[in-house]
Length: 346
Image (cartoon, rainbow, N blue to C red; front, side, top):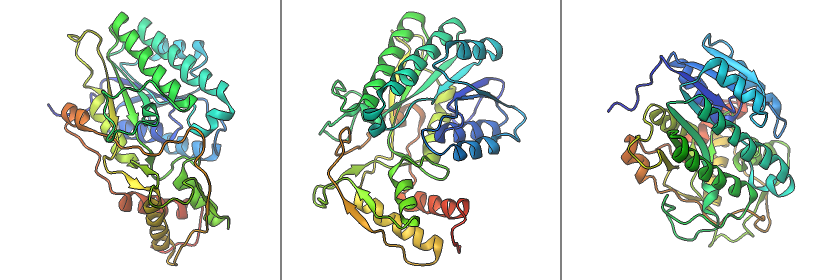
């Protein structure tokens, strides 16, 4: 089977289209001639200028329709499905962030639980060929067994964000079982890249450097037992989603629902990641960059390691993320310096 071929006769609904992954996916679909309906509430969880920049880049595509709305508003969701009758739905709209969930739990229930329920109800009443939705590596909690496999027990989330993502998987399974909605959940592992999210560490470190502030590293300064993260470049995430879109679970299964890890399968120590980012910014700027570092205790809700087994994904679609952090962070550093008009020499 050719997993790279998209059915351009279908209509694709992407929620969270002004978000990081949503923007890149929508652009990829549009570049291949697909009709894309994007929904986003363009909230101010992080700098809305970035969200508007992403939407501006999607505007020139004739087959792109944007709806400014919140998936937690059922009328918005039902009207979009009724009007455009999407064949494939990719739910990427969510309140993101582990630490923010400790301070603002309401936002997570509203978007991640109520919002996702509205998407499921719409898929029930306006049947779709495939629902693909964002889960997260955070569902693994503080599991010590690595790499994380989809068959691992994930009943002990350590943040509300993780609990909402685990809930999404359970809700999707139930709707798939009851109403035969073909659904695929994707557990994303630390996605990064140009036009990314400022609340992510690599972006925040870069902002701190240019603001003349020390970067905060939440590992107690413990270099022997440093945090490990499975950093996954945005292009790899999008290719994985793209290959899955027209390959839904089969009807023969009891519930046409499955869950995949999508990560780089090559975890890096946080300090290695930081040193790589310093080198990449040095190349972008033409001058040596060294971060001023402040070491602090690990934050509530953070986990010591993330490490994806991607065997199931590779078996299903013949794809494995492959971009190295050197390559990915260099692209981010170049973009950041251009976007924010920092002194820059290629």
